[in-house]
Amino acid sequence: MLDQQIIEEKYTESNGNVTTKRYIKGRFLGKGGFASVYEMTRMDTQQVAAVKVIEKSSITKGRSRQKLMNEIKIHRSLHHKHIVNFEHSFEDENNFYIVLELCQNESMNYLLKRRKRLIELEVQCYLLQIISAIRHMHTQRVIHRDIKLGNIFLSNLMEVKMGDFGLATRLEYDGERKRTICGTPNYIAPEILDCRNGHSYEVDIWSFGVLMYTMLVGRPPFDSKDVKTTYSKIKVNSYSFPINIEISQDAKNLISRILVISPTERPTIDEILEHPFFNKNKIPSLLPTCSLIVPLSESYVKAFQKKPSTPKGTLLIKNFEDLPKLPRSASHKNTEIKPEFLLQSPTAKLDPRDRSESQTAAATGTATASVSSTFNIKRNAVISAYEYSEGGPKVWIKSWVDYTHKYGLGYVLSNNCGGFYYNDMSKIICDLKTETFKYISKKADNNDETVVSQSFANVPDSLQKKVSIIRHFLKHINVADPIEAKDEGVVYVKKWLLTNHAIFFRLTNKVVQVYFKDHTEVLLCGNNKNLAYVDKNKKTTIMTLNECMDSGNREIIKRLKYTKEILTGMLQNAAENNDN
Image (cartoon, rainbow, N blue to C red; front, side, top):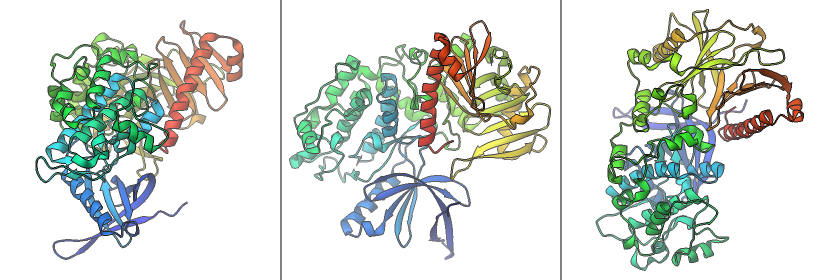
C-alpha cells in the first residue's frame, strides 16, 4: 500500500491554543499556472474538498504573491450557487493552500471532449447558469477575465460552478478601465489585445459568446494552428459557422450580436436573457447525469419544446436565483431523468417545470409520510421478462422502479433480495427473508466501496431516512419465487445508466442487463461470456458472443453493438473518474 501524504493546517484560536487540522492528500485533479489541484479529505470530519496547492518557491516575486492574495480576496468575497465555493486558505513552510468545493463531474472541458458538441437544449441550460454567475460577479464589480470551458465545473448535482479567479480583477469605481493583457488565447476579447482604451465587464460577455459557439460547434470560433493567427482573427472578428453542423438562426444571431469588436455594441446581460434563443422553449433547471457521456433522449428534449408562459429571460434567471441552495451531501451524480418509454403511465411524467423543486425536496429530505405517498409500484414498476435458462445469468433484476426525481432507483433481484440505489450513489441491499441489510458507500479517498452490515432493528440515525425509503418500496413490491444462487455471493447494482434507447444495469456478479425501449432485453454474463436475449415475444435465447455474431440475427447483433458502444462509454467515464 502506498504511503498517504498528510497535510497539516495549524491555526491559533482566540484563547492562544494551537489547533491542527489534518488532510489526506488524494488524487491529482489538474494543473494551471503555478498551482496543482488535489482531492483532499479532512481526517476528523471525512469532508472531501478540492485543494489548490501553490509552491512558495514558484512565486518568490512580490507581484506573483500579490496576484495570489488578490485571487484569494476576490474568490472569498463571492457567494453564489453557480460559483465554486471558497472554503478557506492556509499555508505551511512550503506551500499555500486554497480549499475549495469539490465538483465531482469535472470541468466542461472534459464534457466537450467526451461529447464533441452539445445540443441546443443543453447549451441553453448551461448558459443560463453561467450568465447567472457572471451577473453576480459584475454586481460585485468583479471581472473574471478567464471564462472558458476549463474554468467551468459541474457538481454532482449537475450544477454549473464558475471557478479559477487567478486572472480576476475588481473595479474600484464605476467607469474604471483595466489595461492588463491577460486571458486564454481562444477566449480573449479584442479590446484586451488592443489595450489603448482599456477593458471592463464586456470582456466577460465576449468570452460568454465564445463559450456558446464552442459548445454548439465543438471548437472555439477563432481556433488556429498558432496563437499569433488566433489573435489576428480575433482583432478583425474573422469566424464563420460550419455548414455541416445544424445551428438554429436564433443561436447564430445571439452569437453574432455578442462577438462584435466594439464592446459598447455588445448586448447587456438582460438583453442576452431577453433574446429569442432563451425564450423559444422551456429550459430545464438541471440536466440528467447521463448527458455527461450520451446525448439527451428525443423524448426528453421533446418535453421542453413548448414555449414558456413567461417570455422574458430576465424572469427565467430570477427563477434560477430564487431556488434554495442544495446541500452538497445530497449528491445526484447518477440521477437520471427517464424518457417517457420507461414511465408506465402518462400521469407519472415529471413536469419539467417541477424538476428543480423535486430535486430540492430530495436533497433536503422530506417527512417519512411523503415517502409512502411517492411510491406507486403497480403503476411504475418495470418487469423483466427473462426467466432463468441454463447458461444464462443466475441473478438478475426482476423488476425496478425509477424514482430518481426524488430518491433513487429501487429494484428486486431474482434471488429474493431487494435493493435501492440512492441519488447520492450509496446503496442498500437486503434479503427479504431476514432482518438485516448491507449499506454500501464510497470511500472518500479512493472511490472504493465499503460494505457494512446493519440490522433493521437498530438503524443508525444517519441511515433512518434511507431505510425508511427502501422499507416503503419493499412493502409494495411483488416478489416472485427466488432462484437459488448461493455461489453468487452478495449481488447488487453497481452502476446504471439511462439512454434514449435503453436502461443499463451493471451488477456486482459481472452481469450487464439491458432493457430496451421495445421491451427486448440483452443480458451479458461476464463469468462465462454468454448472452441471453429476450425477444418481443418474451422468448429467451442463450448463446455465446461468437454464436451471436455468427447467427446473422440482425435484431440481436444491432442490440449487442449498441450495448457495447454504451458500455465502452461507461467504462471510459469510470476510468477517468477512477471509479471501478
